[in-house]
Length: 401
Image 1 (tube, helix red, strand yellow):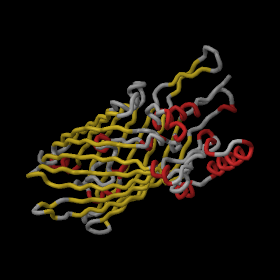
Image 2 (tube, helix red, strand yellow):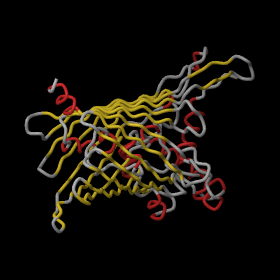
Image 3 (cartoon, helix red, strand yellow):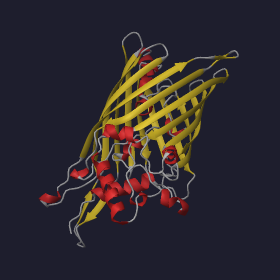
């Protein structure tokens, strides 16, 4: 029997990424994670943000702000930058799944108040060997997802900026067979982000501190249709709110404390368990399932705030939080730590992040390590590496030669 692995692969990603731990027996009846496609878009790409528990809405601008909050680029200290990040993903299960990310920005104009930015993400699911029916005939596929986007950010005042990003996504999770009826095509979608960033410098005692706030609504866009399947999947539209407070410990020594809150703006898919037994309950469930499948992405964003079958209690479960800290010495040496929490009813991703970084005039290297608190989590011991290049440093280096 000829098979397509498209739905199987998508299901495996959903189970492994969204449910990295064995859910406790008492939680099973209430376990109801958010379902969405193009799941790699929800994976943090860089080592700095990951080491602080996957946060970055209001941290100091860096090259990888495109993912966390692109409006921060308008406040970037350097004229431009480029960063390459690499993450071996689910390394406790397999050794050939990875996420690679390339991001960069460039400040425009002489007033230092606007910037353009871009990002390219490539997520490889490694090599998958398939067979048809019970035969010995096998083939190899390499499913992957990638996205490419461009952004623009601008200061609207000395303390506030906003940014927009436009993105194209391609998700190639299937394969084609010799049968015309079994031909598959990649699923594609378009999305946009809108964000804001506010920063101020209050005086506490004799110390000048920095207090920043940020928000980012990401992946507002079309649905992604896997092989003309029914229903098409929502993108991982996400609302991120964050704040960071930075204060000096001594000369050249700073400590930043950060908090991010996240909520997926994706409607909860109906579950049969939430409807009455019998024919009447079955009809009500089928109607709700059809309504969910035909719902537009914009309607889904508004419905996501009040559609959980468990009411307000379950809506609160959909809010994930990250707390993190970053110690900086002379903008050259960095130590970071953080914690990410997701309800056990919505995916149970709970882990600590730790990391460090070292910066010279031209290049900076950051690394992070994830420590999962849930037993048997495939996300445990995840490593990330980011190599960043500062354009001001490169220009100064070339100018001295």
